[in-house]
Image (cartoon, rainbow, N blue to C red; front, top):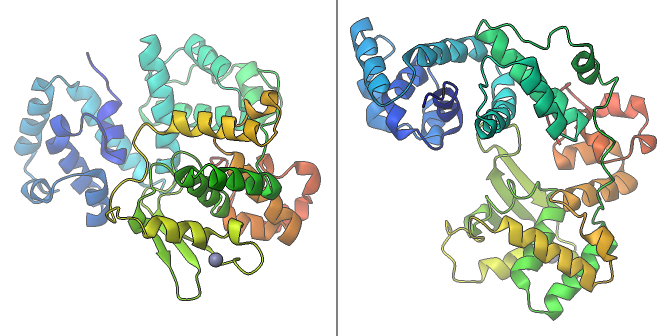
Length: 376
Ligand SMILES: [Zn+2]
């Protein structure tokens, strides 16, 4: 089966299929002259990097292409992907933004066994029916459309008035999603106390860190948390990182939480971090097993019910509840600029966390240094 987009996505993000493709990946990588750190990140072995150079004779490139073809890949698509990568490299930052969206769309197409590239208007409508969040849908459609243009395909929804309206934000395909409950400071305190009473320290620590560092769950917490990621200063400030925030190609964010033991020890990340660091886990051991997320959410919901949150509300709690709650607390205490800085928002996505009615548009414009619609 031919999966035309896979090699390129594997190149940029690592992942399944990388082994079979390492030659062609290395050639693409070198053609792009990616720095070594990035090669490490996407898992291209050092030896490969040296054995194929940008100046590899055309014949060697063709041989690699044939080898990839013999491994079952579509050679034309591979070359197209090389071309795409070269073109998108000039677009700079937009690569990582487009790639994560495109991966999701590609998975959707794979499930329905419909082509991602080129697609049909009907497939686009089907996809649109699936995505509830308007901003997410806009980003994904933009990415999908961009891939069509880069590959020289016509985007079949170009003149669709419905999707044009959706892209412009003027029309919603779905009823608005119900507001997700937030976990603000008081609720966090009750949760942590409950965890302490039950001696559920791992759970308590995951709640504390998600709130203190405004983390997206699971990507910025469960998938990153290992003892080595936490460092405690002499003044008890906790540093968490470097982690890869959503939209970053490499881990580049190290976050800080000040010690608040004096007036609120239960809510001090330093207490929870020292508890973890006092254990005998090795520095690179994953704190949570890979498939912990489902348990994290179901555990959180039952903890919420245990502290008296109505079950209807508890069952709606989703993965960003701590990030939402912390954002609102920071906003109320220190304003919008502080919220954007702590949550590392550089886009209007912050308005889905802090209700628009609380934000003055001028303050928003001042707080954001660049426009992007890709975060949440
Ligand atoms: Zn402390």
